[in-house]
Structures are given as C-alpha cells and as structure tokens.
Amino acid sequence: GQNIDQPTEMTATEGAIVQINCTYQTSGFNGLFWYQQHAGEAPTFLSYNVLDGLEEKGRFSSFLSRSKGYSYLLLKELQMKDSASYLCAVFDSNYQLIWGAGTKLIIKP
Amino acid sequence: IAGITQAPTSQILAAGRRMTLRCTQDMRHNAMYWYRQDLGLGLRLIHYSNTAGTTGKGEVPDGYSVSRANTDDFPLTLASAVPSQTSVYFCASSDSAGGGNNEQFFGPGTRLTVL
Image 1: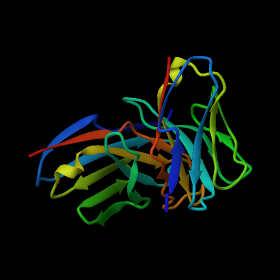
Image 2: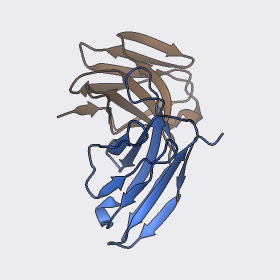
Image 3: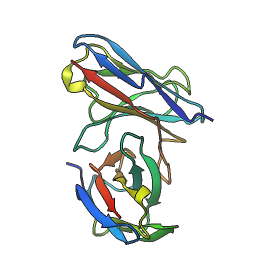
Image 4: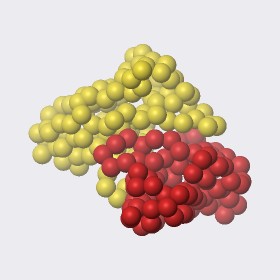
C-alpha cells in the first residue's frame, strides 16, 4: 500500500527553527508537495520538490531525498501565525496526490 | 477573482437524504478534485476530473457521484447519505492533471454532518 508518515504534533518557540519530517512509500514518485492548513481553513501550497536537494523560499525551505523516500520542511524565524498543520503529499505513478495526515505545529511565545 | 467557491458552507443532513455539494472555479483549470478530510487522516480523494466531460474514481468513491458538464463546475452528489459520510469536503482544481509543479488550489470546504 501507499503510505506517508509525518509526526502528529510538534511544538516550537517563537523565533526558533523547526524541521517537520515526512517519509513516504508510494507506487512511483512524480514530485512532493508541502501545504499549510490553518484550523478551519483550506490547505494552501507552500513548496514543490521533484529533484533531490533543498528548495528555499523565504523563511521556508523544503528538502528531498528520493533514494531515502524522505523530505523535510524547515521553518525559520517562527512567528505565531505559523501555527497550523503542515501536510506532505506525493504524486504517485498515476499522478494522483497521496496525502499524509499532517503535522500540527504549535508555536509558543 | 474568487478562485474556487463551494456551497453550502455547512450542512446537517438526515441519513438517507440526497445531497449535492457545489463547486465552481473561475481559473479555467482543466482538472478538478473532490477530497474528504477526517480527523487523524490525510485528505482522501473521492473523485476527480482531468478535463470537462471526463471523471474518474479516487480512493474512496463509494456512495458518491460527480459530473463535469463544463470547465467551471464540479458538483458532488451523495445519493443516500450515511453517518460515515460526516466529514469536511474540499473541492480543488489545478491547471492540468499531469506532473510538474501542478499546484492544487482548494475551495473553503463544506462541513457536512449526517445524523
């Protein structure tokens, strides 16, 4: 079966750095996405990785290792507004998105 | 620009009733999707449409049907609602159904409770 694993919940301090990990086992791989979802709202796109390495976008970076089936999302200079769930999703061989259950990130002052 | 709209925002429905969730996008996207989101589970694909006039089954299609008569609209119908269909339903769209940085844009969701 297809599986995406993320920690259920993480806590971090305002101003700090946090890394949210995602491991996947899917039938094929055609790219990995990270989305942010605030409570009661729709998911919104953060990043996309298809090749190994780090993609940086402002305070957010996403890393991919295809050989390890592993990605992480790195959030720097955490702000209270970063409190949200972060969803990892993988395009499988049929170009269908397989979603992880999400990591709820709690930011404390 | 509205993006994607969904209606209703929320609904309480008696078991056995028929219900249609509406979804409209104004981005001229070819591909559209219906997901359900339940606590502790990832988004699960119900049905999808790669282009107007075509539809396909996702991971959890039983009890649901869709149609795609035109580019903009993608309604989801529950023929006879059951309590296990209580969930938050998200409609999404993307420029195409292929690979690449094919970001999906999501509607605000419909919170459905079946009693």
